[in-house]
Length: 138
Image (cartoon, rainbow, N blue to C red; front, top):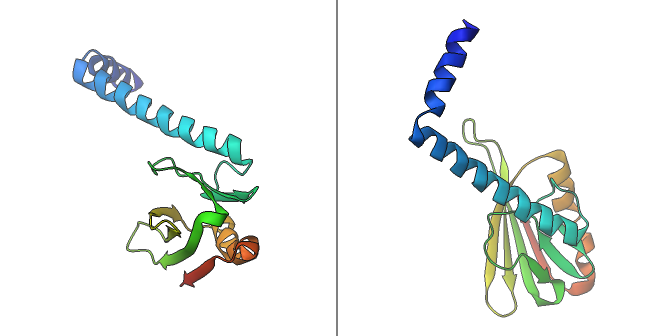
């Protein structure tokens, strides 16, 4: 039975469509991990955390945010966090919305876990010196 599996895999690898799709997906995943690694190295936070606050800056670790992911806390007017309940098998998540003083906004999603619950809970304490309005729903 294992021989049939190996024969099928070998046949699929000979197909240019399968090999192109595999290399494309591998490149995209490598790019995502690289973007996350770079921002985590600059922030000094945890690799699996969605964001980190340090040195007067808000670091967004999400690799799918394509604007500046380092925001000075002095430039933030409001941070809004909404808890989104799970629908079927998607799992619960948070939606974080950052409104800057210049009118621009950044928004991203991250999953719900014990570590992320603690990050959201401590958000007010970490930003209290910067007079940022924090709204947490849920």
